[in-house]
Image (cartoon, rainbow, N blue to C red; front, top):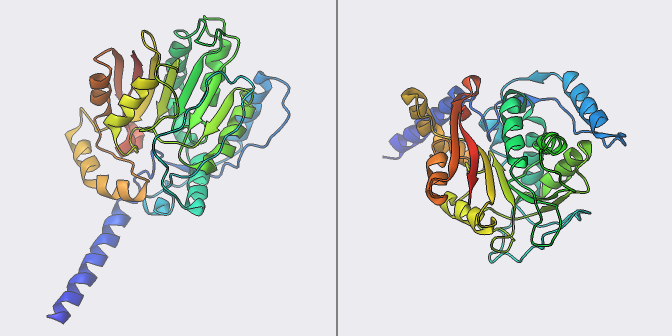
Length: 334
């Protein structure tokens, strides 16, 4: 009867609220903490070393605080519109994607971009050593003249976001064993609100003349076949709609006989059944509240399939990152 139905609805509502509170410590979108870090000021720093020093000082004086809950990011999911920024080192020409981006909320995009700009500090500090080694390995393996006859490699970062990897590009470029005249970096992201943050980070590390940003999705990249020297994804493949299609698209645009794909992605736990079960149970909530971020994907296995096993594949667990701790990373070669 009607009374019993009302009681059932109330019970289910309370159950959902209780479940949300219990899992409130889970990370929202590949990030486990929120800090009070402000956006980096646009200072005319004289050189790369000064830029790095300024960035480190900013991080030292900014305290971090409570874990971001899944509920806090229910309003922070986003994939959106379209914009370009010019690059002085531009080499590659962009093509027209075959599909149109779905319209998104600019307000939600803006909120999400701000959270990603201020909420990744602790995570990046923990993975800095591993990422720095990975990017150095990538830069030591790319170079030579590209199709345009210049020594400027084309690197596409899919799901660039706020460009937290800028410092790894700068570090690896300055100590690369291969002499490079510059970089043509194209950041692809469906959220147009990420662009200004990405440019701020590029400016801090002396990469502003190398970076262009374009709105797009991993499943339909705006590049010709075999035109890109390297592609980078970090905490991106958890959220793409069709991971197999995205990986196939990445392989399509990479140059044959040597194109590189650097990846750093959280995945389903391989060595902890309890954690894997927690990831599986929490996955529907995470997917709903964190812009399609999946906790239970076997990304490493899928990369091996698409790249025919030509993958330097690694796996580790970040102990204090809970459901986004299990991580696969490495470099695949076409």
